Structures are given as C-alpha cells and as structure tokens.
Length: 590
Image (cartoon, rainbow, N blue to C red; front, side):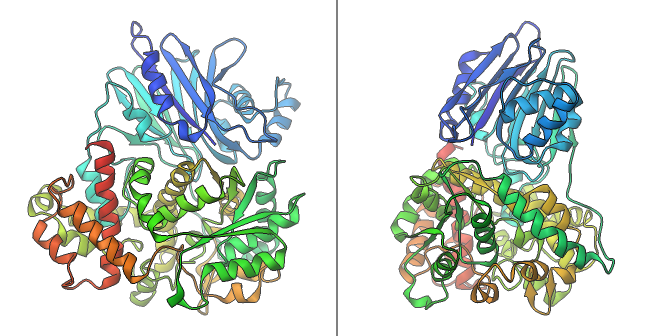
C-alpha cells in the first residue's frame, strides 16, 4: 500500500515549504497511516504505507550513506530478492531487506536503467544531488498512480491528484478539453487529468526534471512485436501456466491477511486455484452481489461458491443492499478524482466488507483486455468490432454520439469533441502491431482502457484501506500474452481460448463455459429508477456544476421516459457517468 508526495525547488534561494509538504502528505492518509517525511534544503519527500505482517515496518523516505541520493517509494517490488541477489554479487551491501533499499541500491548501481529490471507495482521519486535532477517513475502497467505539476521554479508530485491540489499555491480547475475527451472517448490522453494544472505520469514512464528542463521518456512499453509462427501455441501452453503460478506466488507475503477476489469467472477461479496450490494456509476468497431474484441462477455468487467449494477455500460471499451502493457514490468521487462507471462503487463496497479479513487481495484484472474476454459482453463494443470488421469508435465508449448530442452548442463549438474523437482514435490505432480489427481493439484496451481501470480499482480499494495485486499483469505474463495471434485469443466463439485450454483442469467446467458477466451492481427496476432520479436532481438542479457542458432541454429529454434514439441500457450507463462527473466537480469545488 502507500502514497508518495514531494516538492522540489529548482530556485537556489527557495527552500521547501514544509507545511505545504505535510498537507500534501496528510490528505493521502487513506493510503496508509505509517511513514514519514524527509526535508533537506530545496527537496522535500514524504511517503506513507500500511505495514503488512510479514513485510516489516513501513519505510519512510530514505537516503544513501553519503546523502547524495534520496528516495520516496510506495508499492511492491515482486522481484526484489532477485535484485538484491545480483547487487550482492556485485559487491553492494544492505542494511535491511526492504523493497525501498533494493530500489535505492539498484539506482546507485545502474542509474535510471534499473527500472527496466523491476517487476512490480509502484510509484517512486529519486533526487540525485550529484546531477541536480529529480526522477519520477511509475510501474510498467500503471497500477499505482502518480500525478505532478511543474510551476514557478518547482515541481510538485503526489500519488493522487488531491495531493498536488493540497499545495496552497495550486488552484483546482476543471480541464474542459480533458472532459471532452472523457465524454466521447472514455479516457484522458497525453497525461491529462480532470484538473487543468495537474498531469498524470503515464504507465512505464519516467519524468526527469532539472532546473533547465523537464523530460518524459518510456522505459517499458507493451510488446509491439507479433508472434505468428506455428510454435506460438505450444510455447504459450508450456510457459504461461508456470508464469501465472509464479506471479501468484511472489505476490503472497507470509501473512494470513490476504485473499483472492473470486467472481466465479474463469480468470478469478484459476487465480484462486493457483493461490491454493502455492499458499501455506487455506486461501480466503471473497465475492459480492446484490439481490437479483429476476436473474435466475446465472449470477456470480453461485459460481463463486461452486469454485470455492471445489477448491476448499475459506469463502465469504457478501450481499450488498442497493442503498449502500448509492450512498457511497459521493465519497467515492473524492477518492477517484474523475468520472467513473457503475462497477467502481461495487469494488469500494467489496473492499470495505473484506477489509476486516484481508489487507490485500489478488485480482484477475487484465486477462479480458489482453485475450478478448469482452467479446459477448454487452456495452463493451467488441461484438460490434467483429460484426463490422472495423474499429469505428473506442469499444468501451459506444455511447459517444449520444453523449455528444447532449452537450451545449457552445461547448461543442469551443472544444470540437467529435473532431477530437476522430483524431484521438486515429492516433491511438496507429500504434497497433497488427491490422486485424480484433487485435486493433485489444491494443486500445491494453494501452488506454486497462490503465484507467487499474487506477479506478486502486483508488476504489484504497478508499477502504485495501491494496489490490494483479498476478496476470506480471511483466512475464504480459509479454507472453499480448503478442499472441488473434486466433489464440478468440477462436470458434470462445474468448480467452489459449488461457481456457491451459486452466481447464483447474476450473470447474460450469465456470469455464459460462458467458462473461459484468461486476455485480444494482439492476432492479427500483434501483434504475433511483439512479435516473438522482441524475435529474444533480444535473438539472440549480446547483449543478456541470451545467455549462450540457443542454438542459436535451438532457432533460434524455433522462425522461422519452429517450429518443437512446434505449434504456444507454440511459442507464450514460447517466452514471454524468452523475459521477457532477459529483467530482462538487467534491473539488470546480
């Protein structure tokens, strides 16, 4: 768990404002109570984390013996033992066994190139007094967030945007261009955040700042090569299962305060099976659902319980009341810092329920994005891609035209969102390594949708004080799966084809063959009506902060029973995004 924050002044006569640093540090307390700060002249670092049993006490920012290199680090380095072994062979000595010291020594030995050796989820800052340079870095897949602002001769950074906004010299303002991107594309581009002055460091990137310049570079990227030879399937069968099992193993600390999120789908069921195989104690598994009597027996809870019974896990199945779901939306908007879909509140509730039993959990995120798991999932666009044999919009944002029609003419004229949407789609597809429509869509999912989803889950879970770890996003697994040819990802109507072949002896047959379902959320008629009513109250009322974006007549008609060209599912999905956009504006007074 954890967060970092810091201030670096590049003006010789401008020392760090310690009180401002502490404000930035304290506003992220939900990410861990332990930690501390380190201030010296023009550099101030702070970090916080939750000491997990078996990992040792949380480590505050630290420096090397000569005080020439200082580090603030949060997260986990899952190959830290390998890093330490290599460094000891090369003659380096260690005072402790923390991930933080492993990172510090690795930087001393290899410089910024050390990042290419790391396999983990983290955000870090390194001040190198020898060169007068600050290095910020984020893990390869973007699991841990990192925000920054360069202004007035200094650079501010924090894990969450609210940490940067807590500095007294920073004003929270909405970035309307970024909002236009989100409304039509479902994501931000080029490191934008919802807040005009604050930027997000992208996954697998470094930022190097000196007095004279600020430079961003990639140290890792998704594989851009393609595997097309006849041996691809054989190699994947041999290597992927071992890589996944070891990825699970290295993410389990010697503690009983952990578990697995078990949805009853293939990915989480295989994850639970591998965890049960490598763990020294019975594995805890957790699932959540809402009362769904109209859905029959095809619900996550039933399949999760079936898998747990077969594996022998200690399973806890939580049933949430729809009222809890709606009550958490306002608080969650402050944590998430951007508009979000319906699943975020479910994740926040689940994290709150399981927090007394586990401090961190393993999650199966990433497999759907890499291996076409969203084919057949309504509202996520891959069926349309396959039917049209082309990528005509961002697959997870199929309602972009509907949302665009709700905007005020003035907003449309100023930000030209439809032109922006076409440009962003063309630019994003240009980096796809293959030309077939499915592969092009999966490129969008892995490079844009997945990092947003990981940030969302990170902040939703941390809102309840729980950390999430993702074995399938181990760099070894990603580098095996992403380059595979499309027929190993989707074949004869079967999603995640190669993975299901590998895990068919681990997962119950009923689970392996079930269709993809979304994370549980309230879908009963009363809850849908409550959501639409909440949207009308927030978006059309006199205190609406997003009124400048939307035409009230068009929006009112959309939220009424006369939806025009929009069906009920569209209204249900879009209204939640508009509700949360409004709630974030209210939470931050923008």
